[in-house]
Length: 115
Image 1 (cartoon, rainbow, N blue to C red):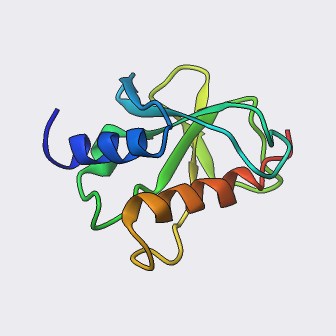
Image 2 (image 1 turned 90 degrees about the horizontal axis):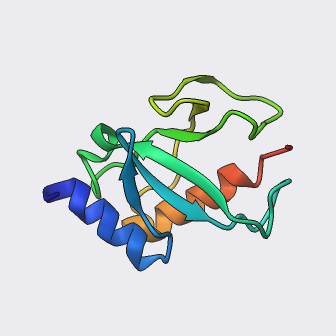
């Protein structure tokens, strides 16, 4: 790995999210602070090609196991079997370091999980 992908992996590692590359995704373990999965570890991913502009721009799609449900979402099949990718815009990009903004974005999205 090198370039933006390595930078993204390094930033996620710096947040303690244990990143690894699987099925074309950078997969991380996140503990949501809100939503139906609060307090438990939740595996999520972003497509490797979506971090090509890291840290200038955030990934758009968040990949989660299909059993993770939202009240409302725009989703489609993920490259990881049994997963869906969810369209989520990241507001406030550039207001803080990229890793901090991304982690706050993930927490906001995961706070919307209902199942």
